[in-house]
Length: 253
Image (cartoon, rainbow, N blue to C red; front, side, top):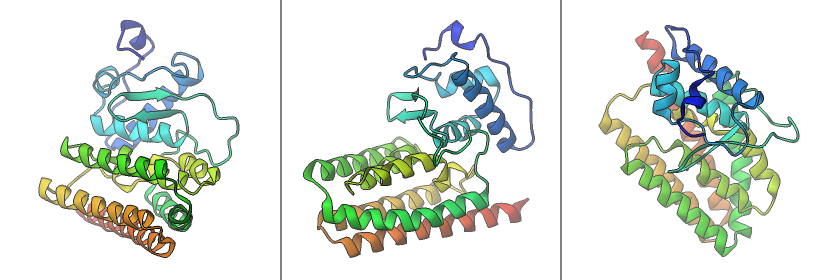
């Protein structure tokens, strides 16, 4: 949706809260209400992050948490470098998360356990079945992830797109559908509102890139066992890093 006066007519600044999670939940509810009442229609582009920040009086972190919640609910999808667009209503609520239930720490950890089983099998099947166009799509997703890191982005959207491309390469549409419905909100760093230093952030993102390259390499070499091993190790490491980061944050309170 364009950043026009009409786009802000129904906007009401959110109440201040001490915790960004409360503001993010309020913003999810406000935006999802606009989608459901037709103020934001399927195919329309959401206002920019900056415009949402201005309209609702929230931080960029809150906006990104809220968009992740809308994505997990299947209400919007982000196209890298273009924007976030409203999706057509889902035909069925199967695997759908409610937009106002942004996952808790325990939810994220539980979802990562589910993804470890689901995506390890998907990686193995992708290695056995992938086509040349699917390999090209995987390579493109990796290149876009690397480019996002160069621009200072946390790369969450392009990270998720890589995992979706792996699921699609299974040739079984249900893998991709289940992963899409689980949503981007289960990517751990979309739930972290702090980074200890630019150096640590860079090192962390380089680790993720290396793990993705290992998965891609195994799929490229048509090695199902190795692909499953690398995917499981990647998600297991993500779970452990997220748990550690949350423990550190709790100790700082």
